[in-house]
Image (cartoon, rainbow, N blue to C red; front, top):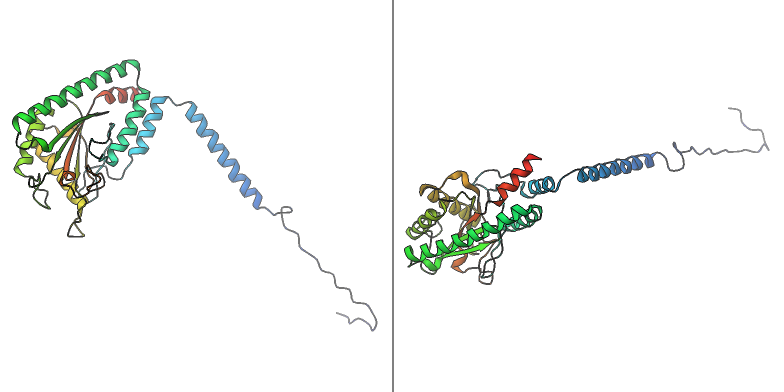
Length: 290
C-alpha cells in the first residue's frame, strides 16, 4: 500500500452492514408463524366443539376430570382411583367431603343437565328408591346392631346413599394403628352387605383417619386409611359382594374430616361406603352410541 504524500488528506470510510430481512431482521417471521399456528389451532378447536354433541362433551370432560395414573388399587400409593359417577353433599356434622365426592358432585350436575325428560323421571324414581333403601338400612341397623347403631350413619345424597361406619370413644372399628377389623366392624359390614348385595348399584369404599400424626414416616395415615378401605372391601366380598360392582377403593387420611372443628374426634376415623344410583348407566349407554 502506497504511503500518502505529504499534505495529502486521508479519508476513512466506515461501512455499516445492514441486517438481513429488513429493518428488524427475520425474527418477526417466527413470531408471525407462531401466531398463525395458534389461530389455526383455535379455529380447529372451535369447529370441533361445534360438531360435538352435549353427551360427547360430557364424556370428554369426564375423562380429563378423572384421569389418573392410579388405575387399580395400589396400597403403596396414597389412593387408587377409578371413575365414579356420583354427586355428594357434605354430611350433617361439619361436612367431610373427599376429593372423589367433590369430583362426583360436579359430574352429577353436568350429567343432570344432559339427561332427557325420561332419564330425569327415572332419576326421580331412583331417588325414591334411595330414600327407601336408607330407611330400611337404618331399621336393620337398629334391630341387629343396637349396641353400636350410633356408629352407623346413613344418609341420602344427590347420587345415591352414603353409609359411614365411625369410631366412638372406647369403641374402635379397627385395632389401634392397624388395618385389622374389630368384631364390631365385621358385624356392621355384614348387616350392610345383606342390604346392598341384592342391588345392582355400583359401590365405592373410602377410608378416613383423624388428624393425629402417625409414629412412623414410612407408614402414614395415607397408607393406613387405604389399607383400612381395602380391609372393608375384602370383608364385604367375603360376605358376598360382587367385586365387579366396585368403582373406587381409596384412602384419604385426614383430608376430608367429618367433624372439621374437632380434627382429632374419633368419628373422623371412619369407613365410607357409597352406593350410587343407576341413572348414569343409561346416560353412558347413550354416549357410547354416538
